[in-house]
Length: 402
Image (cartoon, rainbow, N blue to C red):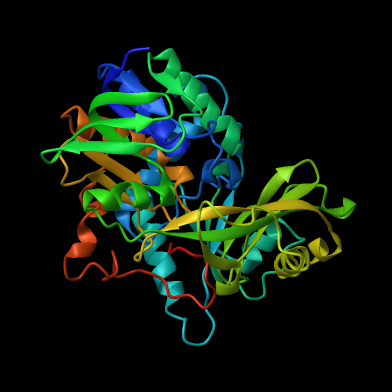
């Protein structure tokens, strides 16, 4: 094993694997990926992997659009299988008293998405119910409908991406343990792993909330915190044998997608469902009260789900930034890049993030402008301003914005 690489990627989740793959595709030199445990062992293995493209800001909509196009045609772009399942995505917005303007914002955001090339429509609650009569839609005057979106198997996709990176010449190192960055005279020169010291001219840090402890000793203070977010797998009653749409349902305070034959993934919105935790010391299972909360939440949109049965569940992590937008790009340490802080909405963007970072590292034009995602933006006044004038207001907390 060589002790020197042109580029080292730290983090074996979907963002790290996608970046390594994109660098391998570009023949960017000797590239290695280092994962502390096994591929997809962190947040990437515990996500719902929903591929919605509905955003109220253009930069993230562009990343989500490019990412979804790669998942959709995975065998052609990456090779192997990612478990892509085509399914319509519904995004609802709160239109309760005080939030009525969200309906006009929804129309404007769908128009923006159409301009970018995203297949999205404004539909009424009655229109949704006509497509799936088992839905309760009295609280949905309007919603966004993406008929050709879907979801993937998060572990299958991450492993497949890592395998594709390996086929392109990237070395994959699992069980590398906690890594320490080595910097000399303001430039990254390598890293220390469980396998020993490695030299590297460029390092990409894609370790989610764990990047904070890796960067702080270098004088880079990223305001990223870890939130524990639970999901439950519910067995549907026989009358719901047909799969339902994917919902990012801010009106009902729930997100859901089909999970497998006769089963659904359900997550509950609300601040009490998002506890700040130490990413190395949190409970990975469900709270005792969560099954009841999940069944109650999904029954607001699909009443028959209230007669479902809780099977199992787990808790994953959101790596949250104060503005809920990710940090992607170069740091002030020469040769050091970071991609983190995706705030629970990174899986859909990851293949695009990899392509953009690889282009920036190799000196080419990025397919999506990464300037808004500057890792150091929080040091400047005005960082907390909305990224668009069509940003929604919410009465239920999903941990991230749309």
